[in-house]
Length: 116
Image 1 (tube, rainbow, N blue to C red):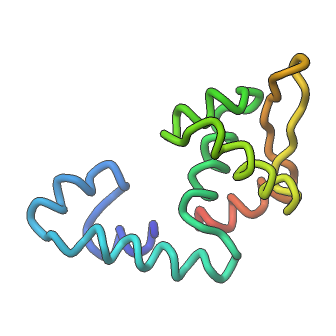
Image 2 (image 1 turned 90 degrees about the vertical axis):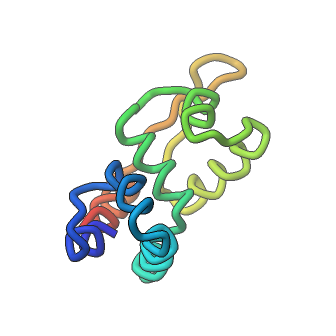
């Protein structure tokens, strides 16, 4: 995604909304290239967002990460479990009901690959 943005004169996704006003096909192009590029590393946009959020907020609980991503807590549990099964994240018990989220070394490596 970063390469596509650079090729089209954009520095980061934050400028996308301004660019989209001038070129309505840009969001679709970015999203399509994003999916295609990340398919090679078996990563979906929502998974990338979650990994990025967890990396930037290590130790935050599942509810906080879910809320920041706009995902309902009930849906987020199974979503996070799938990342855990892949060995990308680790859930550490905070108390009897809450878990802190952290990237594993494999999660850090995948996120680094996705960012390039």
